[in-house]
Length: 152
Image (cartoon, rainbow, N blue to C red; front, top):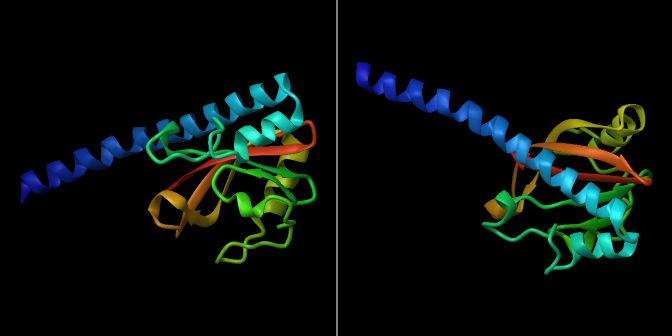
């Protein structure tokens, strides 16, 4: 029994640094996208996010299974790294299963602070579109809310 508890304790201890590292990876991926957005024309950046061969598009097993999403400040999807069918759709009124208006929340936050973390629930493409808790790092750049998130 003691051995089981020791293994469990070690697993829990090891899990916390991985979660923090994953948040660091998501934040770094957004910083990479922001840098690209600042150095390139808007359309080229949006294609790098939505285009299946773009560097910010979701490819299972690459970029730590992260992808970038881009919204305007009114909730319209400008680019999405996994759900291209959302581009052009206004999702301002969207809420997660708990009723949280995450797009409104992150827009308010980036207008006030420029960037930050937001937590909500969303579909996870790497897990067969299962609804999971998500924490996203978002930044406001040239009128665009650019973000990436991790599923917990």
